[in-house]
Image (cartoon, rainbow, N blue to C red):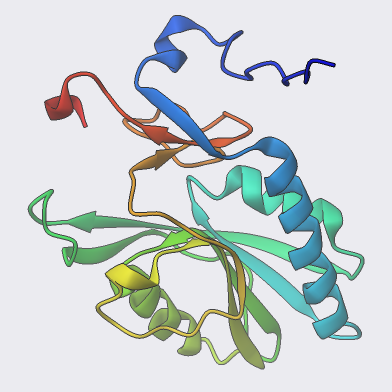
Length: 196
């Protein structure tokens, strides 16, 4: 009896979205299952508390929405946007705040939600900025963690997956504002390596 393989979710994509897509690292079903597990843990830990989810724009939109839908505790939502500047190859470029929070954090339990943590520089900046708002507590929820690239230690409370070193796109992760809407996470392998 022949084994039936699932259809490739990339097959129906516009050619512009298929270009540069390598193998799928995290399929949609695996992401959905892990997000549900993380939301269950967060719901247990924040039962009876005033929770504020803080998403880091822009890539966080899909993960944040899916996480929020799975929570079974009340949660307010806010967003922060930052920009890093400096040489493109420099992972330690300075961080600048582009959009600040609208909600006050004082006395509330804040959960910073981010797509990926690499060197830790950006996360360290955000944690310092949010601690200055005097939340009752501050924790971090990240979908993808790359501890091998860490240059600054940051504590991550909820982690989805330990990510490979590859350049990844999909599920909020983009390249020149493309690929963010993909429901899976794939390697980005452009034919022209200078395009990356």
